[in-house]
Amino acid sequence: MKLRTRIWIIVIAALSGIMIMGAGGLYQLRQSMMQERRAQIVQLLDLAKAQLTHYQELEASGKLSREEAQSRAKEALASQRAGSTYFFIRSMTDDTFVFHIDPKRVGKPDPGAKSPDGRTAVQVIRDGLAQSKDGKAFALTFLIMSLAQLRLEIPLLDKV
Image (cartoon, rainbow, N blue to C red; front, side, top):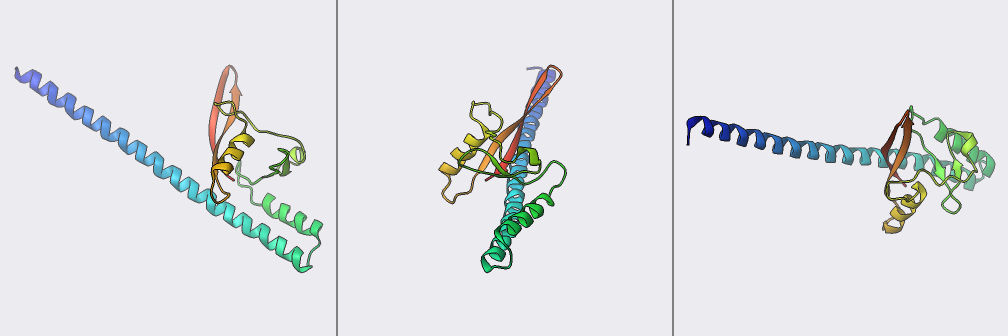
């Protein structure tokens, strides 16, 4: 075997090894970013739940009426908007929004966008909750955007 051939084999083997290690590193980076995002979502929802529980306790103690407690709780959730990130509350019985940052969507049936497998966002959430042991689940839903003739399906990670 010529020296030139041996060098090419070494170079190809080295490049293959670098590419395999790079792909593995990118996969690990993605996994750790998803784990961090899940932890962030859990923390934000725990804080929102604590806030709602506070207003529920004020109502139970008689310091606030039911309507006033609900109104203040909705104001508190609405104030926690950061750009396109916000909280919403959906009824699990009739697919309507109980609270949404856009008041026009409250009280109207909205099953959500369809996922690639044909299920609606609400069905993805229900399936996740059905498989959950503690009543909490993550759901991968999709935001569908159409730009000119291009259709984009952007995955969104939600916790319910």
